[in-house]
Length: 203
Image (tube, rainbow, N blue to C red; front, side, top):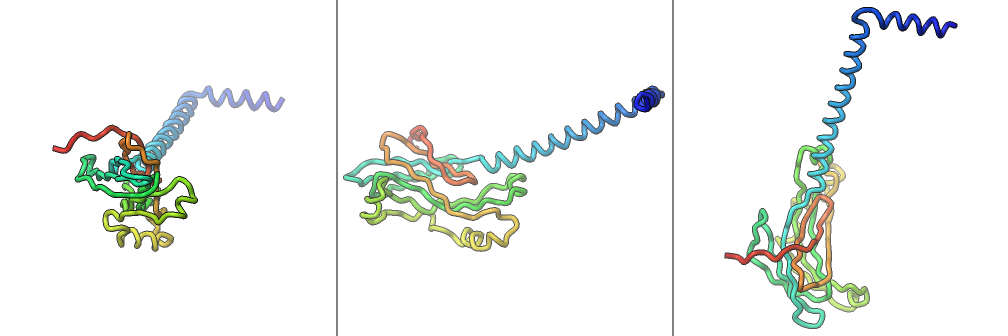
């Protein structure tokens, strides 16, 4: 009985002029505020994802066999997408590897679009079979002066720098395939290698 009385009193209160309208406006305002907050959070999250996951090309790579488990690797660095002067490197093995240093900023900087810091420092040959890798001396060439002081400073002080999430080395490797042109990309998660088209001839 008391429940019926309460419901009747609530109905009378809602039927008063202006009260129902105010409640509707309040609900609509809260709904719009929630939608706006979620939209803002989504925009920030998407910006962070794009900055975190976006990759850009670093170099083009072509390989050519010149002997038993010996190959020439042509490294064509890309500057803002433009091929630079090729560098030919002789390596041993049946695979090649690219490595370097990467600095991953704290997410609040990534959300603002802060690009990651990276530097390719080494190209090396390697063997797919561990036994061959152990039996042969490694062949490697340093690029871009190796690791610089900026990366080493960030690497050593990483635990004490609030704006750095991680400073680490990254590497990617692939089997030698003279029929394919490879593109080396870098993202905050590390280096990756993909197939691409042969670049146009330099003019």
